[in-house]
Image 1 (cartoon, rainbow, N blue to C red):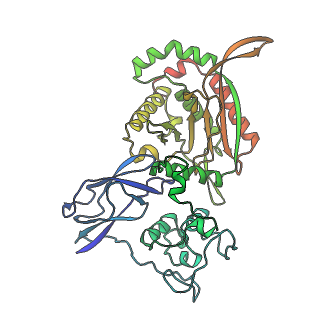
Image 2 (image 1 turned 60 degrees about the horizontal axis):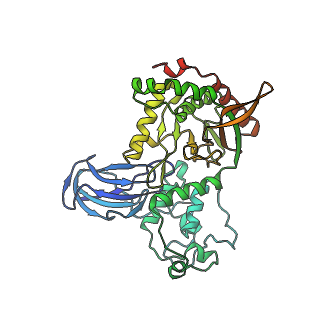
Image 3 (image 1 turned 135 degrees about the horizontal axis):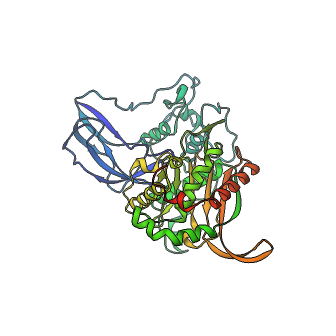
Length: 426
């Protein structure tokens, strides 16, 4: 019998961990290959993990409610079938210098800290994310070099490092201790008020936001868009639209529809950055931030939105919001976004500063629609206004392009007609 490891899957580019919700099989039960084995929850969705091999469930290394990093071994299957088992002992690549201390050796490894200079390393070999993750977990350069890389040309990927950390003995100094800052005790915090630990979802969201701020050069622009005719059009046809398509005619759907068309002319805004390369994405897949009742946030994706009619966009958006609030999103519902829209106007806010969802390079924020006095043809009149907050990565998008993008959205919104919102198929 061979023991085949069950690994916590990598569920999306920015998801680093998941919570075991429920084991669908008990230890000792037989299971077929690709049969549903357990349920896992991340900050984005709940997914069912399938068995990597046929055999008998030998061990559940993570219990229900526990958190596991992507790539971590969470269980074992005894199987007679040939399977690619995880290598439990990392090989030392040729890049390790002779005499370099390995993990567990008596020689103290050099570690990242706030007071010592980083050793000379190849910046092309270690990504900024891997270096940051190594620093947070007190992984020395010598220890990093002992990890077998599965990336291109043997590069160490995030998954490689997370797998290594899952097998690494616990007991190293904390990051705060390395930085020379004193540890804060729980008793000291209790004197300030009630202690409420972050959920795994909130911790993942927090890490993503901080990572984005440290990754992208955020710049924000705000444009006021006159949406008076959109408000009038919506009020006139929304009931008939719902009866015909079983979906609400919302301002979010309108803006998603318009933005998907405008993005065709701005490929650098529908892009991603990988190292020193810009990837102009083939598809326009727009993520839409959805707030949940437990104060968390998910971003389901309307795929190929520019190829959809408005009724198709409205129906797909309504479906995604429904399954998101029911916590029934599938992995395909949250992956592959190339641009994001966040409607904080639904909570009454007029202007916000949205944070880019990595590895995207821009995000559009919608404020609330409100009435305001404006000067039109020399007269002061009351019009319906909408502020669009556009955050973009200044590494590849400059102010001129950002301004043209917002003006294009403003122009396209002003040109919308009842026919454009009613056509079933393009």
